[in-house]
Image (tube, rainbow, N blue to C red; front, top):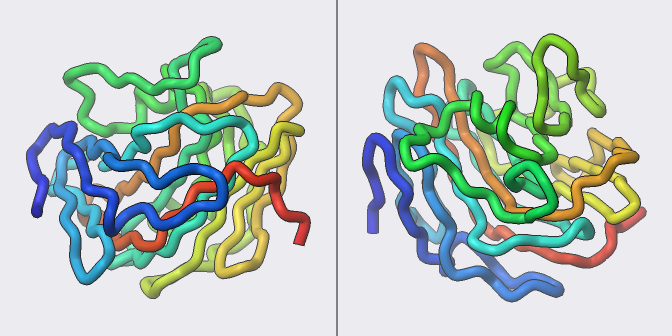
Length: 223
């Protein structure tokens, strides 16, 4: 069933989105936020913006601890589709839940300034960037990325993505089985929700397909 609106907080069935996981039961409902739509196509989930969108997102209904691995496959449908995974996303402070204003439209400002998270960007050449991880809150004038990768490694085909964090502060992003981002945060975010974010450019609305998402609380593998 298709879900769409200009500003929407919708609920997604899990059958095509979340697969089996090692330690965490598959969650039932992911929240859709932003100006766009989501629908299920051939066993995958299509996530897409409308023109003029500030970004669209899927937000896990559950919260996860500091020792968490997220794995999924993604197909960017156009080169301008900028892809992000956020780990340990929550409101600032000791809590682990992410709540958004009723009028929130999916744009980056609230996520930059009013959200705690690890922000992994991995298909972002359209924004003149290479893959990176940064910690939110993030001040564009004074903050720096925790780590970057010197080149873009993704195109418009299916890719395997792994994003992981550990309770020792280790952070990792792997694309197609190859680690491209490794960092350590000495002031660890202790857990929160998971966000899959999609954003285009001023001239191109973004769209991508997601499938085979698994979430595990097993320790980060050193392989």
